[in-house]
Length: 304
Image (cartoon, rainbow, N blue to C red; front, side, top):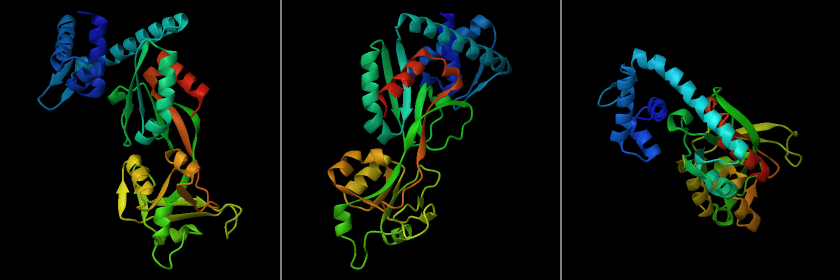
């Protein structure tokens, strides 16, 4: 038995909470993962995990061993990473997470050029519009848009994301008689708004008066957008807006090509929305990873 490999497996089982998750990560069978942990327990002469049909829990001995094992595994990974950086030979898997739309439209070109620059690296790109626990999922680095709430993560601000109010020309042509494109945020109450539910603000849409607004510059107005469709998927928002179902309040990158071609009309141009920060984040135990550093550097070099 390779003791270090068994320790790495044990640490990931505890972090992810299941043998099956680690089996998927390592492309092994659940039985093989379980046997590695069992062999480690036999070597140590102590039971590390209490197993039931539905859950795993650390024993008292397991709790003490886990913290030391996790620290040792991280130190070994850092030492290997430093050596490979010196040799300019990064290898192995890099697990990257992002939202679905951002990953498809903005991150994929970065991943493509990063893999070309580092042929020894393989990327596992996890796209999900909902919140995921980076440690539990074994993520090395993630892109998050908006305010960060988890202070245990190592964050590097890499830019800003601007939201814009858009609608297709088809939708605007079909507005009921007497209803016109909005001039002030309150006019949105007459329109069918498509709400993205993964933001903390959900249907609270905030705008700030610009130079062309009919009120004092800097005046903030929040409206509760209403409509017949809400979703936790940015891709559904995109499809709904493009098909003429209603008004979307979305990051500019979600509709860059369509806005450039004139397929969509930007509404309330004199009422910009507050920008949202974009961060690259990693669990603290992965902050010194050579692959994470290389990916962050590559992203900074090519931009988003």
